[in-house]
Image (cartoon, rainbow over all chains, first blue to last red):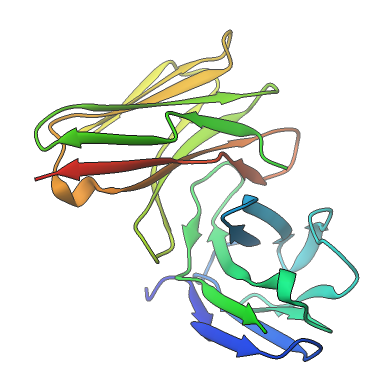
Length: 113
Length: 111
């Protein structure tokens, strides 16, 4: 298995633009998570899905953030409009069952200028 | 919100020495995990310990859990330069499957 695949690896965009981050989880994993990592706040859980259904989105910072999982092999995290304070590394992770270890993707480094 | 806090924030040791990192958390947990993150990379799962377990081993890694003190420790024995990374603990609470990560310990192993 190729692991959790995220794209793009790097994204530089101007303030106000829409940004879409993509994730392909490991096949057969029922859980998918989106995290954000910054120096100031560390790793923050944004949202997670179980069997493509959003379970907890309490970590989504604002209405500008939205996430979807249309099928078991694909998820997106969208920021519209983007702001400089959204600059961070965004990680996607998946796991096979409740309480199991996560497999993380390599992350998307987002810079909003 | 962050559930765990690692101590120390940074640790520098010579190759061959043992490294010990601690994690304290706030509320009762079901499971606790340790992860490693190399600079600029994603996190790698190291070991999971359940709340009814007290100690687990994996190769050069030893993890202990003390639920009465709400703390865990990660011991890396005979450290190598390749162990240089940040180490995070993560805990799950409640009935969900979400893990909350601590602040991390930055470990530097000097060759």
